[in-house]
Image 1 (cartoon, rainbow, N blue to C red):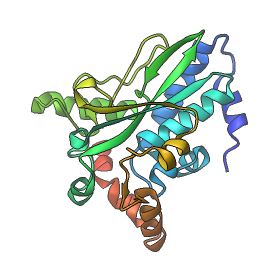
Image 2: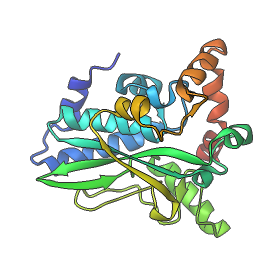
Image 3: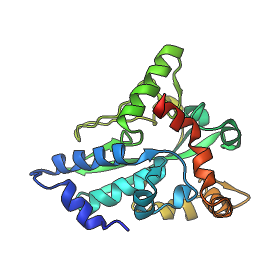
Image 4: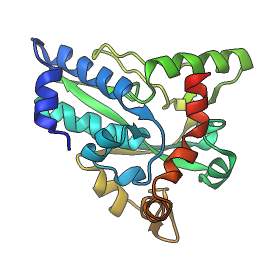
Amino acid sequence: MYNVKSLVENLIEGSETDKEKAIKIHNFVRDNIRFGLTRKLDLASAEFTLENGYGHCNAKGVLFVRLLREAGINALHHFVTIRKEIFQDAFPSPIYSLIPSKLSHSYVEVNINGKYTRTDSFLIEKILFQKLMNRLIDENRFCGYGLNINAKCDWDAKSDSFSQFHRNLLEEDHGTFENPLDYYYEYHSYKHQFLGVQFSIILDMVGTIFNGQFEIWANSVLNHHRVS
């Protein structure tokens, strides 16, 4: 089990400003946690994501905020809904077909010296990001593979930087939340549920039954791109 406090202390050692700390934490989450799906989905804790080594947008956002707060930097979860086209060709076709047309996506608002900066550029590790971006450019597509053509994977802690969110994909803006569980359980427009049951609960049951094989299959397309 990861000790989050010790992890953050090691990450920010030698940093003199919140800006330096935030960038180091951003890059750790980006490159040390692979972008992908887990059986916990939105209900993955920071500790689970660290142990598992994978996380999608909301799970990596939970980890990012947890590490920032441990470093004394305030951050908020900002939830929106975006169109599912962003994930075309990122996951096996049966998963993509089951994804709702609108997805509950989060980015993080980070308070650096009194100014909030928005980012989700920590979502896809840099090497994979570059491979997927090259595919988008070659195929002359606006989005797919989990990113859009204007995406960035670097962040300077001074300006907004996104890898998935884009205003052209935006459907609804649901605002900021201190705790994402307030959004998942209480916000009426949360999309990741079927007949009132959260996908996270369903996938956790499936993942338990198949003993980890769900994650292997769900991330097989992205892992193919990682090694290609």
